[in-house]
Length: 240
Image 1 (spheres, rainbow, N blue to C red):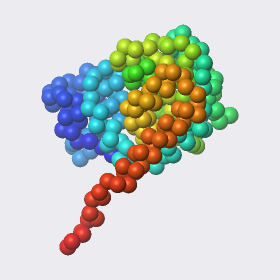
Image 2 (image 1 turned 180 degrees about the vertical axis):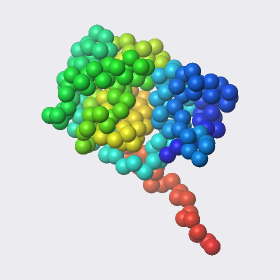
Image 3 (image 1 turned 120 degrees about the vertical axis):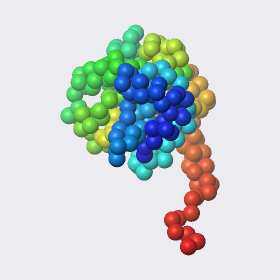
């Protein structure tokens, strides 16, 4: 799913001239089609986080409406695991400890992944606020995995990741994806979950894995119920 350039301006709350300057000077991600500019909603959100710019929380709702199908985050976490007492005094050390704990296919080189995550972090913080970061490689295709995985690592001590709100990070959700669309959809679903204050408190408390998963499933169930109850748009051609 994509946004028009005008829609992107609305979510960023800036003028066209400012946005065009950001394209030139700050790498605002845009795509061209039919001589028009378009923006991927999750790329825009990720860029805004890196640049420490405010952006409307409604932005990620566009990504969640895409047709890309992925398993619920709770299922992906069951595969990737929830790991407690993860060491590290700085981002690179914490990321290396995270990679050591992820259940990866044998062909994935852990040293390469740790380096890629650290390089991605150097480009801009993946700290999304509330003491939470979502480290991931910029191009998931490089890892050549068949199925997506999400791992949650709860750090022994908070680490300064240069997050947008200035808070040190105590929880890391690491995303491993086989394709870019899957990657972006997982980021969108994670961002929705992290709006929940009860879940954020469980992460701050380093709660047991069963409690964290239970809360995530409850959020997912509520979202499914809302989606099922929402009125559907009439099919094209109806009433003709």
